[in-house]
Image (cartoon, rainbow, N blue to C red; front, side, top):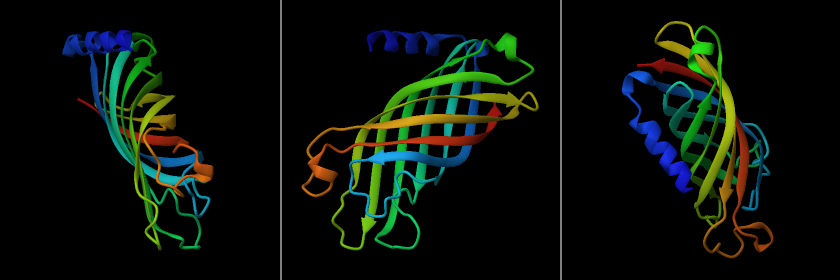
Length: 195
């Protein structure tokens, strides 16, 4: 943990001219989820839309990424209407490791990303018995980014999110009294603006 903090400080201290600064607005979906939270409509494992945005600063190889994303309707499936509304929101900070810029300047630049933050799962059911849960979270994944012009491009990415159990869970809000856990994959495409 201490080594990661030192690495982030060194990356942040790198000259601004040596780093690409990007804003990414993305859309896509979540899939392959699993949870110990009561999932009335068995929707956590199904495809669900997701949107969000991130700020990325990346040098020749290393960078950082700050991201906010939301998956509305995460606990809703079909027309059973047991859940009236729901969403899962993630806020994460990540370390990025990319292929060297000089080797990928005119093509797609692959990268890996890993970090952590928080995950908030909220759902409103007809009986009002399931409270929102905020969990610590880790995420990891990878993708590619490419540019059409010096300023604009696109990226494609896949990430895994794992919610970390913490605190007491009210009786009846998790399956079998287990600690609250939530995990899922997310695949996205982003419009990238480099400034």
